[in-house]
Image 1 (tube, one colour):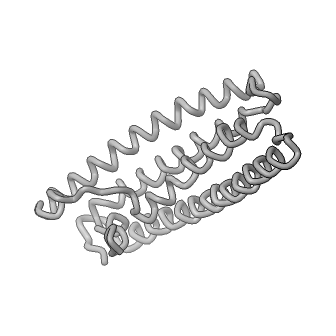
Image 2 (cartoon, one colour):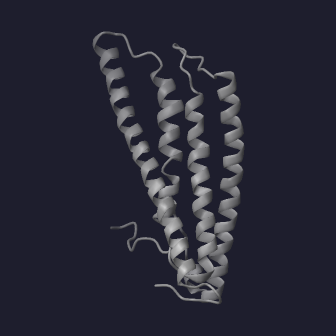
Image 3 (cartoon, one colour):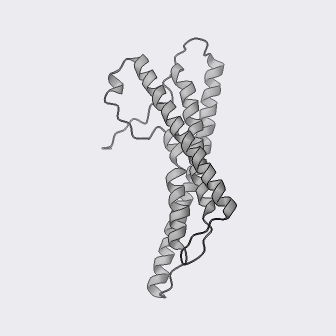
Length: 188
């Protein structure tokens, strides 16, 4: 349910809802990629354990693949989807007691600060990823594993997070949509 304030008409509401929905679709796709990484990691580690136990020859580079590819993707790729579905941890002891205007202002401050943080994270990790790409970074483990591609998971996840936070920030003064999480608590 939306409320109209000032010149924010139906057309603009539809545009913002469409932008957020499309960002949500993209975030869902990269979350599927993170899920595939989890499955690959399980197969990879299981195969490594089986080989090391039965033929005393583990897969070379398993620790590097887990550290530089699987875990980085698992952590940073789903972040925008978690934001899109409003599943981040919230402590709203005071928030719910505030009047509507103060809640809106607090939400906008939180969205703006989060966008700045993720923007800086995107910028710095992009610079790092490009530097590592240019030098062709490899691990120094038992096997030479090229590790620079995994570094692009951070700016990808954080960059999409910035776009989503900015879209929510623009939308927030005009509606409560996009701020309410699912109706459940930790005991369900």
